[in-house]
Image 1: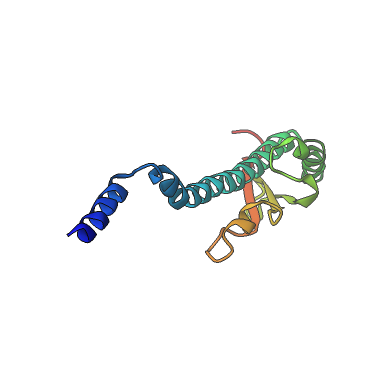
Image 2: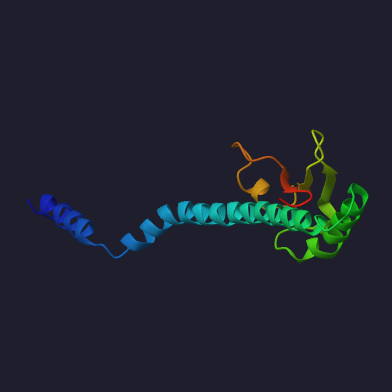
Length: 148
């Protein structure tokens, strides 16, 4: 009779002991939490870079509108990108390429297109097995030539 009582008492005491519960829960949930946190940071950096590229294209188009012809507008865009692209967060100015031309159809609009090689952003190292956005961020901005 004594032999059956001792294992029951020990098993009840073990079942009632909750001193290590927090450590086990932390060990199970912390990798998932850290992965989600890193994912949010990596995607935030990518979206920040994409927004910066769009802003560079829009600002370059606004700068170019003061030019009198296509050549002068292209020079203004080149000068703007060279002087200001390094000041945007998450953007390495040496990885930018741009094109600035009048629209092909009728020349009433001026289009600035900027491409950014985003392979150095941390998002590509985070989830190697799932689908990711393209490594080249391309944004365009169009502005009317000649006023209203």
